Amino acid sequence: MFFWRSAVATTSVTTPARTVELGFTGRSAGAGSAPFRGLNLGGHVGDDAVDVESNRAALAAAFDVPRQRLLFLNQVHSDHVVVARGPWTEAAPNADAVVSRETGLALAVLVADCVPVLLYDEGAGVIGAAHAGRPGLISQVVLRVIGAMRELGASQISATVGPSVCGRCYEVPGDLADRAAAVSPSSRARSWTGTDAIDVAAGVVEQLVGAGAAITWVPGCTREHDDLYSYRRDHVTGRFAGVVMLREAAST
Image (cartoon, rainbow, N blue to C red; front, top):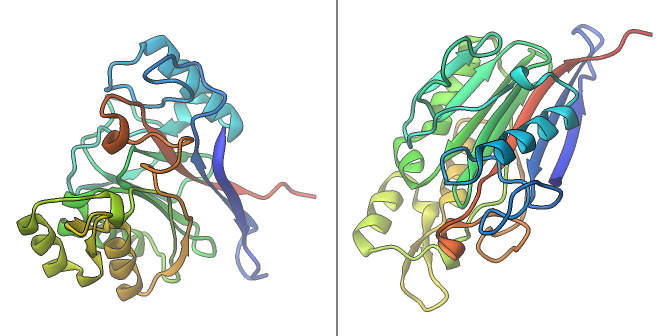
């Protein structure tokens, strides 16, 4: 189910014992059929709704939470950030990032080439997740998330950047490359054939580092890795997820 998974525990004796759980899903072990074969979690791509919900329920079980506590967004390539204080009581909000202080609440973002970013301050008990594509890079959505987390009390923020399409595989017109580079110079790239390209992840990492976040960067190009969904490679395809959750440590 997972392309990558990890956990981080609090180490300070002055803060409550908590664990931050993080993961990026892969295509294996899912209910979807071609062209959505595997663990497609996207409900807006044309896959069978029953299969998508089965996959989402399996992901919730992997994080040991009830299905309603695995939260997805209606992603619209914006810089809008919402605060989650519990399960959504209405339709998922239109946003591309979410933050929370709640334990046992799994925050998810969906991608198929864009950059999934999972953020946390385990000592302060604040987590966040962001979907950063080219529009999100230019609008600096990750800086909005960091600002929202600091409003909730975070101060030492770490960010785990998940797999996405690499700069060599993301060919774009020159004017788009210029727009991205004007915001984050590190995003300027060259494709496999030497044409203008954008390395969205590099630009996002540049923004995170500039904001003082500690970085873990999970390797993997979605277009080059068959265990990840890629719109650039397949056009009609599913979505994988980045998920972050704050869990209270079990008492002994």
